[in-house]
Image 1 (cartoon, rainbow, N blue to C red):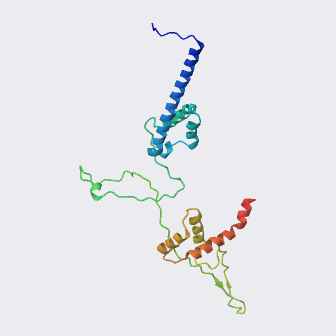
Image 2 (image 1 turned 60 degrees about the vertical axis):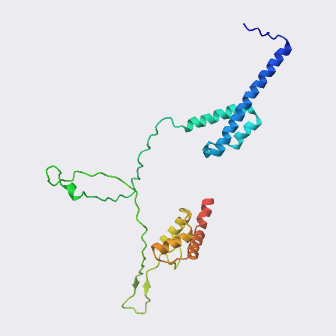
Image 3 (image 1 turned 90 degrees about the horizontal axis):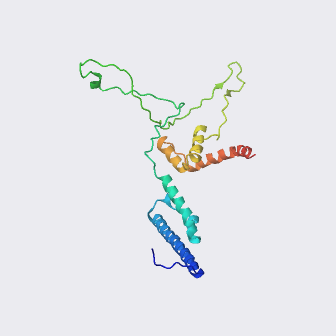
Length: 234
């Protein structure tokens, strides 16, 4: 048995309680300092996703007891991030069924068409298929519109009539409505600036359309869409 005296005085009990409290606080303080050191290393060398927020860091400065909850949260995030096993391959992406299919057949080479054993001509028994997303470059062309003109052979005094022109987004514009619409879609959906679109037209269609002209198209379309915007707002 130990020869140490068993404290019984109230002063000794109070001293023991105070020392226990100081010891517990010292342990928490050590954990706080260790966690702060770990966070400093993460801030300096770790990935961005591992860093804690300023609100979480403030917990260490305000109350050391909060280190337990934050440490548990960090441990939970680490376990969640670490892979539990081999990841399954998501599989090959399927293309939309309504996307047009264009087939190309690759024929075997001449030496593959002959049997290596008997030398006779082989026959086609099937195909190995593979699919890739493909695209055709934009095809620019000049749309020639011919308006039919009619006149009466018997009545020379009757004026000649011509087929009416269809309504256009921009009257007497150098480009068709389809080009104007593609310009708006490229600018606001694909985020292609107008000066780049001007360079693309010069490169692919060999037609010089200035940025100022494209700006005029955008302004005109914006004016035509004002009633629609008001209706949507209502």
